Length: 259
Image 1 (spheres, rainbow, N blue to C red):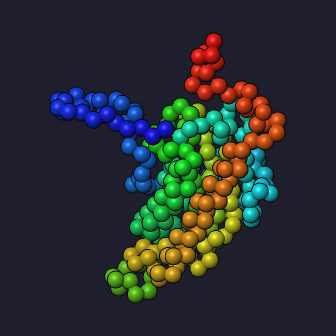
Image 2 (image 1 turned 180 degrees about the vertical axis):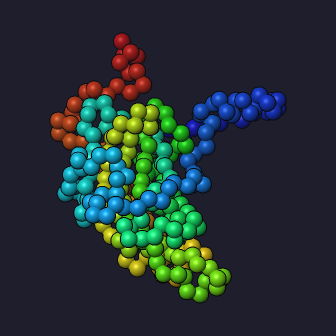
């Protein structure tokens, strides 16, 4: 599925620009983006953040450790087996109900979300080639870190006047879903409530203490690994679901070519 742009010898600069704009096959792989998703707050007393449009279809998953709720479509034509690429959205942040969103610095938020997005890309890239735009047979991965809190002011920061605070992820969970990149139809979803970030903080000016940042990286990598584990398990339809999907699935017009 990897695509490579054709090389050009001596085209006119205007023609080259038009070709680059109009040729979707020449898009670069998805990368960490500067897009700034809004920082949102979990409503008081809410069971979920509200990041997902629907939670009713989520059920406990005995194949995954911890308190994990999942959904995977088993429709014969709309399931994970029918997709061949993926786009990865910027990670959104939902802060704890009693946290002050005004104390969430851009630097800390960017460090937090960029590392997790990068971890997600690493985790899914050998299952689905990661691309940067929607298209046929392409999934869109939406993810939110839920329950982020604001820590104390960083001690010993390089700038003594700095009021920036680290973001604490000790009680953070993850909500994610995969949708069809063209229609928005949900294909799979997961709410992972496991608190993996014990002692973990992502600092603004100085990344706080080294061991706290190491704990944060470990938590991000583990969440990304759990997302991948879910994708692998959901990809393997079983029994009647697998048989129905196999009978209905004809990639790239194979029905026509066989006639």
